[in-house]
Length: 147
Ligand SMILES: [Zn+2]
Image (cartoon, rainbow, N blue to C red; front, side, top):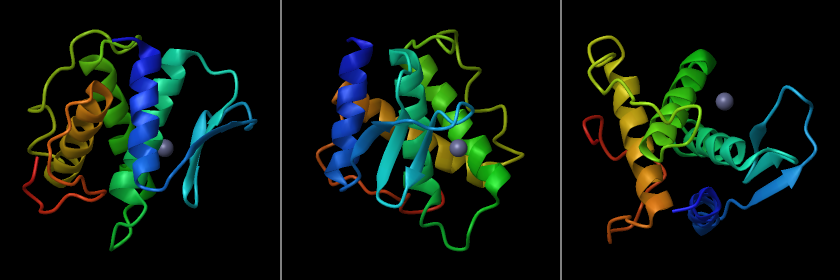
């Protein structure tokens, strides 16, 4: 499947939840961001950058934006980067096309973060591949142990 097809499916996934994906000029160090109920990607990104940045921002939308209590910003960035890497490895997107080390690396250290990362990553991989389960998809994990 092409990178553009993955991007299209993730944009459809986002739009399904009322969050359109737009391209606009952003400051050079920002590739994308969540703005209220939309995701903005910087214009001019390569397909690889679009896919990974969209994954990153969707993770913030899914796992962080409505978290209660609020999550530490560093933890949010750690998780979004982990999902970005996870999805990049699963979909063979450079520079993450090499093998992902697996889920056991941080299981004991950041168990709650790993659960959120695994859940968001698996959901986005299935969304990009068009293999989402038939049941309704949620934008928050249902339980702390759901993976
Ligand atoms: Zn971020």
